[in-house]
Length: 235
Image (cartoon, rainbow, N blue to C red; front, side):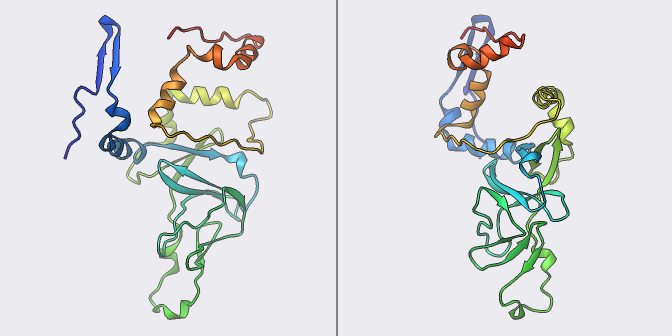
């Protein structure tokens, strides 16, 4: 059944009105529609290649509501996989990051190489001769990177390249990547913050420049010391 989106947003520029109904943040049907039309289709950031400096390095992330392994294989190639065992669907890797030659499913001990191949099955002799290990490798996700920023997409039919998808937003990634002449590196140490909130609130906050001077005073001072002009927009 189609989701009724009428009256969700009231936009009246002539009278300076822009109102969003709370259903946009609370309605589970709208959330499911966003999942299908946004997170299941577009390119999503998963990590930076400097987080995986050597063969065997990996990180696990929840991307668009799906568990993902980003791993640098023994061949030094970077790959993204569904963090899901192809046997019974258990989560294969439960660590946030590390170095591993292989990933072992904790449920039935199926073992996968850091290149995603199925390399170990307890009691394999019980399977028929037609059993094909290659058909049970970790499911790969389409992955592309720009300036070291790694993205995945879950839409296998999506013909759009990452570069085309980013479009003009590449300039912002260039600004981040070009801050140092020696390149960018994700340093050790992570702060994780969780919020029981709709994802659109985070987008709104990133577009709200009015809070900048009050909440990010030291960063504003740094920007101005470098000759940049900090935002001064009103609320």
